[in-house]
Length: 419
Image 1 (cartoon, rainbow, N blue to C red):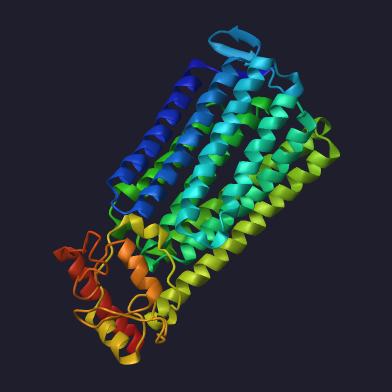
Image 2 (tube, one colour):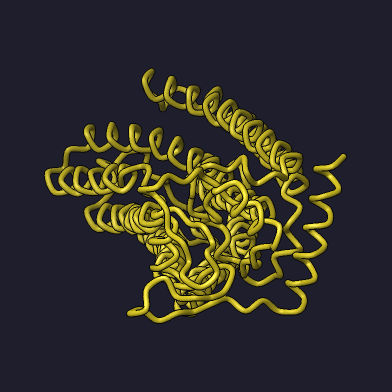
């Protein structure tokens, strides 16, 4: 028997659940304030992800309270079940609800992301939906071996998908927003580590009860950080990725030693397949994170040097820009666009069949960009003339602070480019 919970530990988990719920609610509230549909949906996606984590924690806390054991001197002792078959029916129901609530939150997060970035053709959402269907069918038919198998497969695919999202969203966002994803990834790593420490700590008695809820609370607060602080405080992407990279790598090494200690000392309770899976997942997490961090940092360094925006040939949604207001386009960009006959937005070359001229100022746009802007602010970047007279126009009015920042960045870019 091992310690399952104590009143103090329950209080700490209550705090962790509350912090995670408040963070998810703040994303939902922030989404309601967004005027653009895609920005609002993306914020709702982050909210659903965090709320899914919240409900997972709630139902898992209920699951632990339903375990059989003995209450001695304010501490509950019991046996943590190793397989689904060992759980009573009520425990199984609560445990599966905890897993499904988290997976549903992930499904809506991927769906919101792919609504903005359609290059994945909704593949991530389809994979999550298929897992939910297979997992639910396995629960009703009590196919425990099959449930274990699809859970292992999903965990591998899910880990790969998260890493790809981390890299893709970071790569195609502006330089000043690239630090945000490092915080998201770090917060998720802490949350996952705290949850796993809670399970293995109680199953094997290797970790004090108060550590996992504190780690989860810190991870949730890191998720909250980007939407409550000014974007300029986290604009130095390279510094944040290096610091977060060192922290996450340290966590991975710590988690590796912890996992290896469990696998070596308690290998008798694992099957050969389970042992191989655990070892491969440990190696995958370390190698994949090092690779992704290297690619992201390389991309950040490249963009810090490459200030000539003509190198960007494709209009790609700037996912992380929803956390800060955009700056107005400069006069130099307008002049280059007219001289070289390139689109003012995506900097692509224009053909006769792929051109839109602003009727007021003759600014150049390609058809794709003009249609996109028509569905967003519906205003020319130069003169604020509507692209579509039948739609409302919402031209952006920069503040004095943003205009000053824009001038400073333009001067800095000219200096770097000329040197």
